Image (cartoon, rainbow, N blue to C red):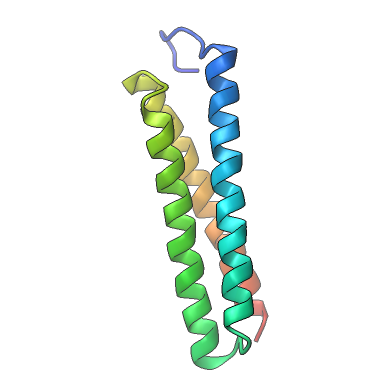
Length: 103
């Protein structure tokens, strides 16, 4: 909730959560597909997998935020966007660390 803003109604919060879960499910499907396509996680295969993972994560974030934009006021959306950007950056760091470990 943004200071000075009315709380986000429960039905909108539920819609945001469902939207995020749907986009996350699509991201998970993409990751499974990438893993099956790229058997060699070393060398070029690993680099390609990391690039595809980062791209898919950005698509996940962008799709979720685009779906949230019309459900919120501009101020609420900006607050959500900032929080989600931080969360997705942390998710990428975690994924990247795991991929680098798989040498």
